[in-house]
Length: 144
Image (cartoon, rainbow, N blue to C red; front, side, top):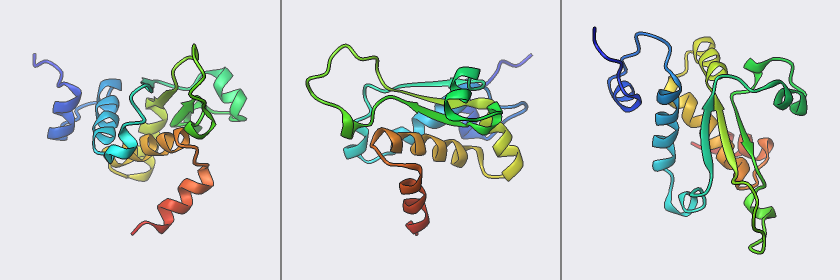
């Protein structure tokens, strides 16, 4: 029996015999981050990235969402514009991608998985830089 492909190998080969696991989603997200311009990437070193199956009930309730498939990613933290260099002892900021919601959107939309994960990853990074959802949608709409 053949072993499972690593996340990076699955991305490169496009070989998915089953739904991509958390390692594949994380590998795509990290590859996206690695392609960001240096002036952005330098501000991401302390962020913790995670992939979870679903958002928990507490997170969904805090956001006013009823169903875990309605949330594909979330930034936990304070935007850079609100931080002070005098702060210490705070938990690191986190970006969580929710695998099952991403896979559901992938199946429903037909968007390439790497494009979808990159979009969600960059969207959550946008929150780290203090951009609102409306700001990010406006930027996406204005991009060629």
